[in-house]
Image (cartoon, rainbow, N blue to C red):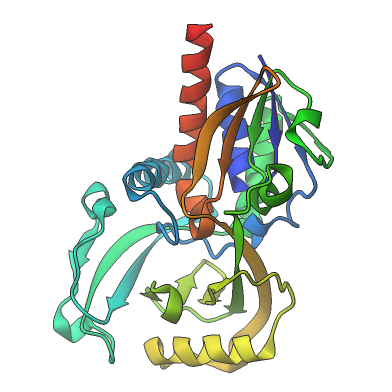
Length: 314
């Protein structure tokens, strides 16, 4: 079976690898490849963020969690590390559905909760260094026999292949006429300083995070809906730093090394479904919001299942 994937972000590459492992022929056609995709800018701490429907995304994120651990331990992917992170909340709430699916999850003691907050929890989860992980994914894809090329399409009918997997991200607004898809702008700061553990406020209106990697820490963030601006804004840099300093008073601005902006492909829910267009099967896999990495392998496995079911029926 010859399958064409549209899009070379983390979803497109992960799906491509899974399909190649199943014996399919796979070509990726995309407007941009790493290092020029939105995925390359992702802060990429495993965490389901800005994404629905919860029942499905909890499952996909849990599946991805364990695949990332497997890649780290069995395939020695060094750009995946396990780090502790604490999320702070203004008031007590129900635990997230995925909390029982991961090995390390505990409620914080009151003495561990940051000033200005009243509740929180600690988890240990993968941190993925996307500047290394995206090239690794592409290399793995090629190693398994996948091919790729640059290209753009105005409609899905133009895409060659027996089956099309649509991982187009924000491109779905034009390619699929999907007006439910919208950008959520995220700006980040890179700093050469380790906070010891990650600190998080995951509420969109007060979004704050410090994500420690091996060499740098990623500071964020912003979640600006319907904002297409891709330039770094000084006022956002100051806003991010002031928020992070509240959670991490030891932050030293003299250690800042870079900034970046990415546009999350947000939707009221992930679109992962099949559609028949002119007799050809299209499987949509986009609209992952701020959880593209977190959902990547779970969604890739879902695409594989859809294709298997349809092949058995036919």
